[in-house]
Length: 175
Image (cartoon, rainbow, N blue to C red; front, top):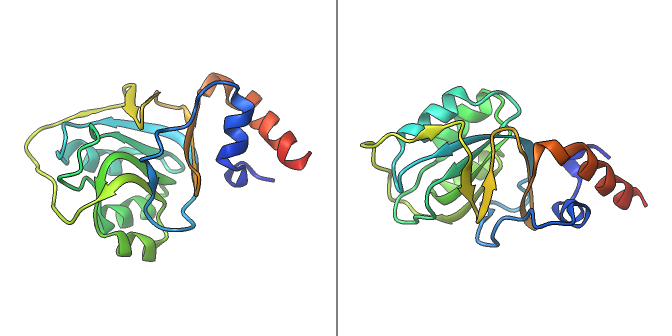
């Protein structure tokens, strides 16, 4: 079994410590799955500039993780951003905040996990930060930590324990 198919529940079991994001962070479309190292973004609630920069700068295979402060009044991501990220090889998005264009995101097949969906666009007034530890779904996520998402939710595996936890989870699955 490849890492992208390891269930988040098995990773959570293998970790022995809490690694699951808050249950509010859910897949935007049924069947969404993601895995990859975190590319972190902290943005003021409802602000878009840092999220847009992340879509341009995140390395292929990475998961963009956005600390949007849990705000739901403005979307930080939509189908145009999903298309850009998909074309660049980004593995997915996890946002502690809202997104929009859920149908378009699903049609693209781009994995997005968010707290909510709203049609309201973001503001473009304040910058944020890239590449620093952030809080998303109640967890601290550091650049390079491994992020897994599936129907059950999102887990964050600390990079220094990734190989060990993944091995234990694979052993349990293949058991």
